[in-house]
Each structure stands twice: as structure tokens, then as C-alpha cells.
Amino acid sequence: MPNVPYVTLNNGVTMPMLGLGVYLTPGDQTASAVQSALSAGYRMVDTAAVYGNEREVGEGIKRSGLNRSDLFVTTKLWMADYGYDQALRGFDASLEKLGLDYVDLYLLHWPAPSSFEATSSAYRAAESLLAQKRTRAIGVCNFNADHLDRLAWTATIGPAINQIELHPLFSQQKLRRENAARNIVTQAWSPIGGIYINHPNDPSHITRVLDHPVLVGLAAKHGRTAAQVVLRWHIQNGTAVIPKSVNSQRIAQNIRVFDFALTDDDMHAIDALDTGTRAGRDPEQFDMDFIRARAAAAKKAEQAASPTGRSPG
Image (cartoon, rainbow, N blue to C red; front, side, top):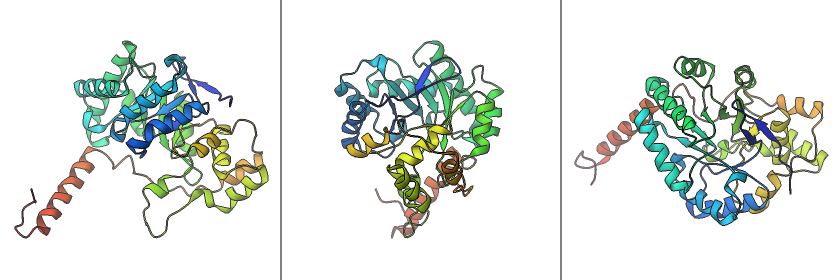
């Protein structure tokens, strides 16, 4: 069984450096993916309210037969539930779907800059959940340094985690340093670049990070897959990772990254792939105002397309 190292968070809780992510994992495949991961030695699973598969994550955990105390379960609060009371209700809903008495890590999913008062209120609710021991640690996702500073104005407990887009083409070195200066662990979402395939800017020209010649060459050098090389790069940088897969073979491969090491030259070669350009949403723009505006534009377009000028139904 792979010996996954743990990192100690700023409140003393320990967390595996590698776990399974389930973003965009279909509901009918989630439970089996979680079960496969736990059988392969994973002890951390990362989900979110907006993923729509918390219930199936809970089912996979049940099927594993593992003791709850041996697992590290993360879920996230969606922006529509920001605000103090709304956040508490959102947490209750997630816990009920997961079928658990507590989670190990509860995260705010985005900073929602145009609604930051609601963001701060939601974080205060997370602090209360921590005090009640309904979660063992709290943190954030997609916060830049300015968001972290704004949160600090009202927070009494610093985030344990900042989960951000991070892969060889967008390595976020400055934000990683900012997190470390605040005693916040950086955790990478889309650690092997799946964001380019899941949400391509240009579907006719999809970027496949794992096909990059540098990564393919390093994989051949070490007798590993390109995904294993990238995950090892993250680990040696001190970054926690949550690679996503529904394929049991790839799930097993992705955790086998603790029995080899990249050289300094290898690390520098991967560092040099950074483009400085994110593939996912910009946290400064992706918030509830953006979502509402997009929904209004879609409704307007739908009405314009209707012969009567009204939305169907």
C-alpha cells in the first residue's frame, strides 16, 4: 500500500498530501471511483456541494468499510449559500448528503469579490462549525493574496488550506509563497491539467498537458506516466494534490508517486513550462454577480429566439 505523507495544518490537524478529486465525476460513477481510490490506499476525498455528487461520495465511503477516523473528507460551500445563516444551512445539507457526522475540511468555494461581506459572513459560519467540531479544519479556494487580506479583517482563524488552479502551465509561484507566508497549505485543483480538457477555451484546439514533450520525456526517463511525474513535481514543491479519475487503473497509478524522486534539473524543466495564464475562471470576476449576469443574458437570448419573444414554458 502506498505510504502517502501527511501535512500538518495550522491548527494541528494532519491531512494526506494526495487524495481523490471528484469534480465532474458523474453520479453513477462516483461511488465506484471513491471505493476504488480507498482500496488503492487513498485516504482523502474532495467533493463540493455544487458538484452534485456528495451523496455518492458518502456511498463510496460506506462501501469501503474503512473506519471514519482513517479518512479525510473535504467538501465546499457554493457561493449561492454565502452569508452566515445560509452557510450553516448549506453545511447541514452537505453533511446530510454525505451521511457523515462531521467533515475534516470545509472550504469556501470562491471569494465572490463583489459580495465579500457575504463571503466573510460565510467564513465566520465556518469558524463556528469548527468550534462545534463539526469540521476539523476550514479554508478557502481560489483566493488571491488580496482576498486573503480582506478575509483577515473579520476572520479570527486563518484558513488552513487555499485550494487553487495549479499545474505545470500555471504554477502560481507567487501565490504559493503568499500562502506559505500566512501558514496556509496550498492544494492544487486540476493538478495534471484536466481543466484544459474539461473546459477548453477552444474545443478545436484542446491543450493536453500530459502530452507535452518535456513531461513525456521525463516520464520515459523515470519509467513512469506523465501524470505521475507531474504529481511528483507537486509533492516535491510541498503542494497537496487531488487528481480526478474514474478509471481504477489510473486511480491506482496516481497514488504511486512516493517511491521515486525528480532531480533538481527535472524540477526546473517543469517549472519552465509555466505560461502565467490560467485556464479556469478568474477569481476576481467569477462570483455571484457574474453568474447572475450570465443567467440573465441566457434568458434574454432565449426570449429573443422564441417566436413570441417569450421564454418557452
